[in-house]
Length: 125
Image: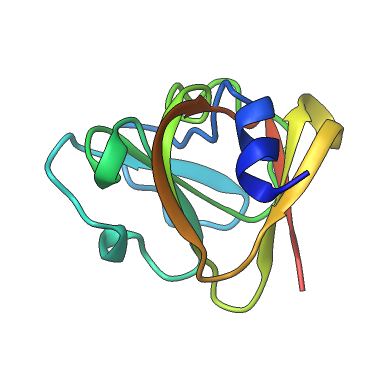
């Protein structure tokens, strides 16, 4: 199953928070709603946007996160970018690293019309 299909199967979305920017590992953070570009994603994070073409609320995550369900954008996003410093992003469809999973390679970015979600994550180097 290809990566896009896996992410679509996890349709509920890679979501990152949409409010404050938190820059510590193992946390998720968000930025205000403004037109953005994938390049706006800080180094070391996976960023997701609520809208296509990297628009709308952005949420970002670094470190391991056993429960991303409290972050709305991770539960319904249309754009994503792995701007990890040296690792690939491993997502899970369930909390606590459970359910189906896949890997988003470092540097990979995509935008489409489908809704995606993730509920937990780790990083693999």
